[in-house]
Length: 100
Length: 447
Image (cartoon, rainbow over all chains, first blue to last red; front, side, top):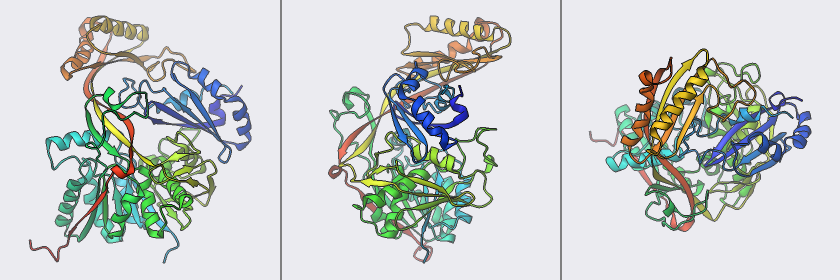
């Protein structure tokens, strides 16, 4: 099975204690595969221990992208977290290791 | 008359590089230059500086940025719009007037105030991010409402060379001049949404031109040391072509524009600003030449009835210490070091975190490689009520030199105050904004 890293790129953003992971396919032909396999449940299982809250997935077929809005994912939130990467900037690359 | 308005993005955060804005200013043929320099915590820190010194509290880099930008703005005839006023926009205007006097440049500055609502918020105000009210957090340091285009329009109408503000929604810094130039109604929500989309793409500056994007061998970006910052040519409908100055580093591609379109957007179908609720889900991006991407298709719904308020509060202190290990069994020695410090500090401090940098610090585990690195850096962080108590963390880590596992080197220790941020909402009517115009001219001056 290919890794997500082979099919898509990802950028992480943050709002408070919410991490927003944008997954964008390199090739639009791979978009249906991601819609089918990269479910919110799959992402939740993969990021177990990091994302403590709900994950909402948005489908953006115009740009062949999926947006994952992960609540309670930044160790209490950007401003008061003890984490080294308080913003979760590096979480994009944790997600890209998932097999799809 | 040109068919489009060109607006550049000269900074994407408080500490951003200074030189890319100068390249835009000199060679960008700009109508406006926006600089977004005010993070959530930045304004609370600025408020603390203002309390110590009433003439302080604006962006610490303001003089460095503006002394170089102002002559270029006057030479090329573009206006600067920035939130570098932070917690003290009027004092920021004084500082800019000082620069103009020194350079003998005629200048008009429009200062937008009214975002500071510390006196207006109540401790029983509900928090957006969690259950509970403001009273559940520490003493508020700052409370700033996110202002929008409505607050900026009178400043632009004054014909100012510089519009200086405190807290303004980031995309509004870029939407406002476009709405002003085309005379858009503030109820024209589709146009406002399209302008907001452009502002959102521009607000992080280098993140649109290859910054926070490059991945060698996978997502190549050329000449990143000299990344160009972006501009947008926006037409009367709010459709735009993104671009950057010829010869600068980086690239504007469909791929990085898509990443930035979705960046930090918690609902792509309803992105909320003070101006509009924008739907980015049907945005169309198209290549329009080298380093040019066309953007269109955002839709808008009526602006929210309340404004978001960002409240800063004291959240205690954090102490940190680091020490490094390498070679055979490095990970086990780092773990032992962490256990030693944990045992010695048990019960003395608040929440404590032990990280193994190089192995599992960022994600708690290694996702696709061995957790056993050649070298590993131990990091310990803990909360404390005072700076003195927090300092013990670094002291304990440093003492591992002579009391800890073999081969520990390169210790560092830090103490910093934490400023927490929570958000609440305020009725628009309770936020009264004002524009103050300050001018100076070498001809009118007597000294």
